[in-house]
Image 1 (tube, rainbow, N blue to C red):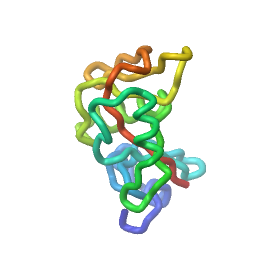
Image 2: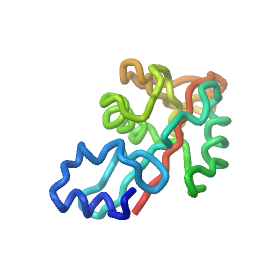
Image 3: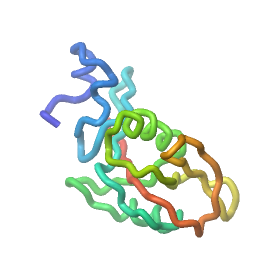
Image 4: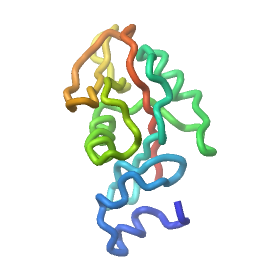
Amino acid sequence: DSGFHPLELYNGGILLDSLFGKIYEGGLIYYLNTDDGSGMVSAPEDQSNQATMPEGEIICEELVLNGYNDWELPELYYLILMYENLHENNLGDFSNSRYWSSDFHYPTAAWYVNFQNRIYDLAGYAVQMHVRATRSFH
């Protein structure tokens, strides 16, 4: 977060993978669209280790962190990117546990990702899992 936009750094020759885990706009970069400069950051730490899916959504929506208040529970696609671009590289201090996504499938079930093995599956809303907030930047 040295004042440069991640796309400027990428266009200046910095490898995309080396931007992952760097602090920008309140969180850790884990996705950058190299065409338009939009991207996603993860909160630097878990917001909960025992929350139902509805509780996780509320925790993220009410979160004010590092000057930003537009956090949300990540969609499944972005949660998988957090796993691949942060956790697999020992970045972000994730637990080897299950994390909720905001993608629901049934009226009472939502998708999660197991950060021990990258397996994703459905679970009932009442199951307690870890929660990690995300936000977008432009």
